[in-house]
Length: 263
Image 1 (cartoon, rainbow, N blue to C red):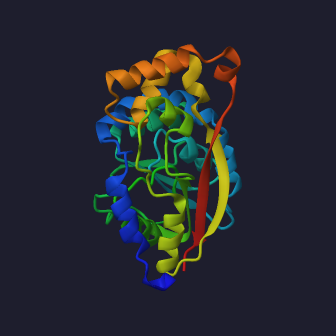
Image 2 (cartoon, rainbow, N blue to C red; image 1 turned 30 degrees about the horizontal axis):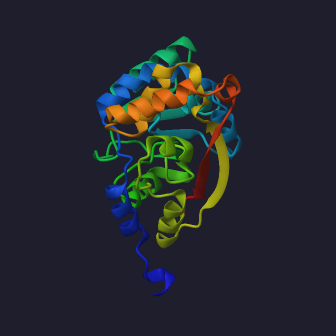
């Protein structure tokens, strides 16, 4: 078999259906919006991502999966028009309040999902999808982004196939099926005739969950649905036996920044 004979999008779709990490629905993201707003704006991730963007001759932005606006708000200060798209109405509500508080008036919110029609979504010089590409069909999503970009696209996708560390999985004694890694995205883009660049940045890891046992359990539960009572007990014992130094240690998650110029 030759490399060109491999359908990486088909492999992605199969892996995505099998993975233990299932996509969250709109209600779950609505519920998470307020807590996300308290920490995402201070993340080291934001500056690292922005430092990789070339904004020369860029005047407009489409931010897909914008959340509460950590990137939209920063880029709105540099650009003429920003279109912020998310399927969580609560995320957009908080983004709009954030913009109002900062006297930012050039952000337009769009309440749509990956699976809605984007016919009415404006094109923009730069299209980004930051930590928002846990989609069923990667090729279709990439085609949507590329179609709306006048000049450039930049996305991020988590490096590694698990949202939970190997240490925590060992505590749970649970075997998981990993999600597709970022390399799938690169290969799918290549099959589309797009030569993308790749860089790596970081965000804060699970050290934030050590503020309390309840937050720790809640954080693991967000990533892995259906924790049994036995698994919760194991996590509680693990947390209770962590020393103070371990609870204060910083850890980080790596993200692949995949970007390309519009053909």
